Length: 168
Image (cartoon, rainbow, N blue to C red; front, side, top):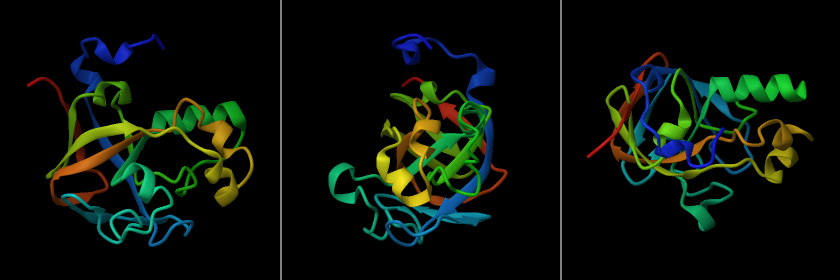
């Protein structure tokens, strides 16, 4: 990956994908629970998730609402480390496939009827190892996903189309 690769123009096939999985946890450190659909609430996050409930581990320092990672990043981390990262062990809310996450920087994202805005990169931290096992942080190094803010709320469902919205 090149420095500032997110400034380049993106091909249409890098900006469209699918929502493969949704995970929520009701409290900081609680196991991630897979759901088929969830309501995204403007200014809060996903209904029933720790960040929307004000119980997330990083709630006081970064104001995270929703986290997203790509299935391709998870697969690379699993291959590199030999550690399984499925079933929510990556601790991210949304797993998508087919889009280039670098394209999200300074852009918005539509998943089904919900519109999200890029908030920040979400590198994995040692808290991940404390929760799900040693080596998970290293497995996701450079592929921890992104944080999003809910701009237009609604319900998202596994299988929904994902589209990066670029430009003004």
